[in-house]
Structures are given as C-alpha cells and as structure tokens.
Amino acid sequence: MAARAFITGLSGLAVTPDERAFLREARPWGLILFKRNVQDKDQVAGLISEVLHELGSEIAVLVDQEGGRVQRLGPPHWPAYPPGAAYAALYGQSPAAGLAAARLGARLIAADLLPLGINIDCLPLADVPVGGADAVIGDRAYGGTPEQVAAIAAAVAAGLADGGVLPVLKHIPGHGRATADSHLKLPVVDVGRATLEKTDFAAFRPLKNLPLGMTAHVVFTAIDPVQPATTSATMIGEVIRGFIGFDGLLMSDDISMGALSGSIAERARASLAAGCDLVLHCNGKMDEMRAVASEAPELSGAAKRRADAALAVRKSPAGIDLPAARREFAAMMQMVA
Image 1 (tube, one colour):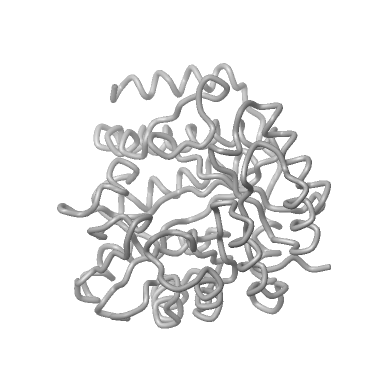
Image 2: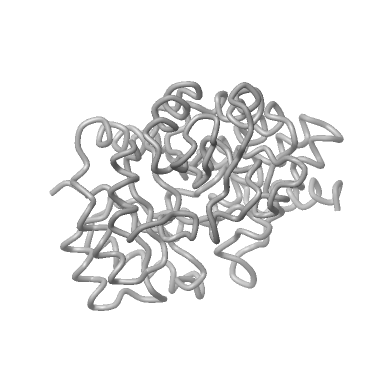
C-alpha cells in the first residue's frame, strides 16, 4: 500500500504499542527524530529498526542535525559540530577553505547518521539574515549575501550526499528576514517583492535541483498578505515552484509550531491544499498525529513522482578514512576558533 503524505514524530525512546498500531494503519511517508527520541547509538538504531519493522525498509528517517544550536544527536555519543556561521567565517578568510570545511563537516554528519538508519538530514539552510531579524536563524546562517549562502549550502548538500544521506533545503523561500520566531508566533515580512527576489529568494535559486525542501512559516505581505508560505498557494506556486524553480519534494515545516493557526487537522489540510507534497508533524502527540493522518491522502500524482525521485537519488557512501577526516575537520575549525 502507498505511503501517505505526512511525516510523523514519536513520543519517546521506544515505539509504544499505540504508536506501533498507528504506524501500521496510517503509513506515514517518513519519521522524524528529536532529542526526546535519542539516548545512545544502540537505542536510536533499535527505535528505527522498530519503525522499519512496521513500515518497511523504504521509510524515510529524518533528523535536524545542523550543528551548533540545532543538533539532535550530540556528545557524548556523537561529535559536536559548529554552527553555519563557522563556515561563513572561514569562507571570509578563504572561500575555497570555507566550502571545503562545509562539505567535510556535512560528510562527517552523514557518517554519524547513516549507520543508525537515518537517511535524510534537514539541512542545508539558505536563509539570508538581515540586521534586526529574530535570532532564530542567527548563527545558523552561512553568511549575509545570497551568493555566499547558496555556495556554502551547496557544499553542505554535497557532503551529505557523499555520505549517502539526502539533504533538505530550508526554509523556502527564506526565514532570514523574519522578526519573530515561527516556533512561537507568525512572522510577517513587509518588504517589496523586488528586494525579496534579489536577496531572500535569490539564495534558493541555485539550489533548486536539491531533492527535498521545507517551507517557511512566514508571511510575505508583498505577495500574499494573509497566508504564510506553508499554506499559501500563491507563495508555493509563484515563488517556490515559479521564481525559485524548485521541483523537489516539498514538505511543510512542523505544523504544530506557534506560527500557524487553526486546528492541527485544519493546518494539515491547508498545507496540502496550498501545494505542499508532505505535511511535517513533529511533537509526537498521538491525538495530533491521528488528526494529521486523517487529512493526509496516499501519495499520488506529482507528489509521488517527487517522493520517488528524491529517494532515487540517494547513493552509496563514498569511501572515507573517518579518523583522518575528523582530524582534518578539527584543524579547519581551529582557523576560526
């Protein structure tokens, strides 16, 4: 049976009986992990194995493993990685060195994830921050110009792909100008379309061929004064699919975030109606998971084509001497310590 158009979280360190039944019945396209699901390597691998038992080996398993403030798997069982700003600082000294470090850092992250069964990382960001914006992006960003951000983001995506892990481009069409944290409330950007196309949106255009993307819960009043990009058919059609040209598998950002209004079912319905291929729901609350599943159809048509195409571009990891690569990466990061 076909998977349905949503990605789900789980409540804790193991799959509960209720979750096991839910997975079998609802058939989500993917699973996303958070710190509440992570204890150590054996536990994470075991949790994923339980999910695979219910859903099959083709299930997508996602995590937000950026480095810095956003790192779901960390010490003592996994290395700590720097935030995106570290690559930006090194790029300022030498663009070639910054790109090499970004690609190698992502390759090492992939080496941490793939043995556990995690095959998708919600990375890279192509958000371009501006002065006065909320700090939710902040040091996660790869620089202050669309050209630099796009170049480093491409290097990160390549590093993940080298390690057999699919990248997710976020937060399309840009969260860097938002003056609020969309986890808490709805950001509204009052900037003209021409400026957005030269800056915020421009960073995503060179990355339009990446296999997966995630929307931004941000209102851009010059284009749609009411709906955030996630639930705006205008933003998805004219900007994400149109101006940016992104044709990959498009997922919403987490629909349980404070930026969106309405019930969880209404949010899921609105995201899919606007043009998202998948609804992302992260908090692991069973009543909300069931509500999302009730709105998510089986993947079909263009959404299924994009989902199949995304999974098809995964490749076997390139060979790497991990101890040597970790030493090389540490030496690179010492240049901006």
